[in-house]
Length: 113
Length: 114
Image 1 (cartoon, rainbow over the protein chains, first blue to last red):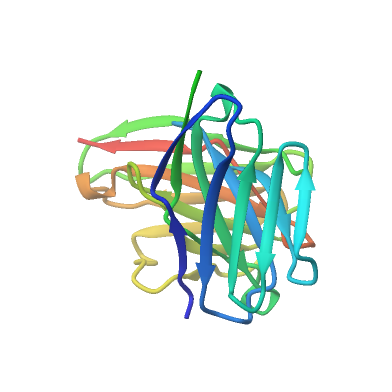
Image 2 (cartoon, chains in turn blue, cyan):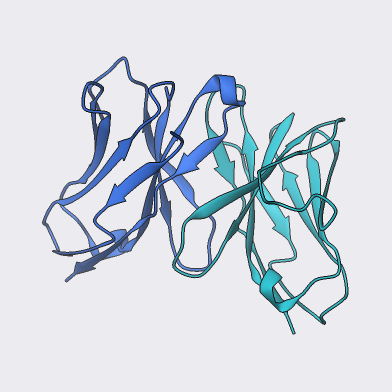
């Protein structure tokens, strides 16, 4: 019930291409879905987040698409750059659980120049 | 977002000793902080939720007597790993919970137990 499944585990994309990472969840009580970016040896940084009352949110080159009926959400990185090479984590949370987050397994993205 | 610091960034200790890690919220009064551990190439695993002025809430399987958490002020939470063993070697990361849903993470502390 608390799992968040993330795919793929790793991704290689050419500079300028689109990186797409998918997540699926089980618990319909989740009502907050953030994405985090983590560089090696650093803490995760909040990238973008969405609530289930909207189907899409865009911030710069990063877009979250959310499908409530399918219990899936995805991150699209447009015009991928070598500096985007990092590990990306999706997560899900809900207020009744004290805003605790359940994280997906992570996706290592490598953008080739 | 909130700015979070951790100290130390790296620590090496001998097996059987205790290590304290500090997590500070630099620009936000945090009633709730979270402690995670992360093994190499793995995801973040929540260890406990730290609430200012009250006892921490530990996740299932986390030994509360081994991982002591103190949240004595709105800007400081500490994690003490007691009687550390090599299997406790990991990357420990704290986060600050805001009044909304957001969590902002510290830079992490690399613990190596020899």
